Amino acid sequence: MGGSKGRSIREHLRPRRSRSRKTAPAKPQRARGSYFSPRALPLADLVRGLRGTPAGANLTLADLEADLEAGFAPNPDGTIDLVAYVAWLLRRHGYGRSSGGAAL
Image (cartoon, rainbow, N blue to C red; front, side, top):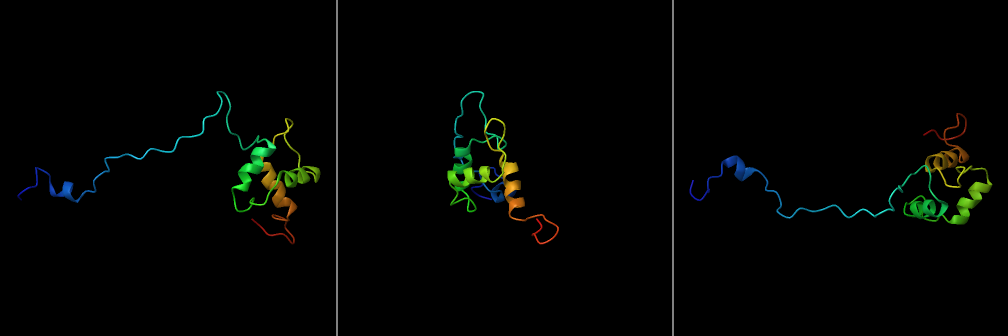
């Protein structure tokens, strides 16, 4: 075959890799020793994070404070455990009850 420059048929059929490698977007830098934990979120961070989801688009800090007054217990340091909060909301709205509630 003329002009193959020493490449085999398999090499011609194999997709070529792009020469420009895409790099992942830079992760936000956190202070040394700090980390993100869904089990210990400050109230404002929880509201900010949930507002970015369809289910939490209308959530306000006042809504979260009303849930605290309605019986949701925060962590001893005042942060919110996201997993416990979601479970509390589901129980509050009747999910998982054997009679009358929707099962998950």
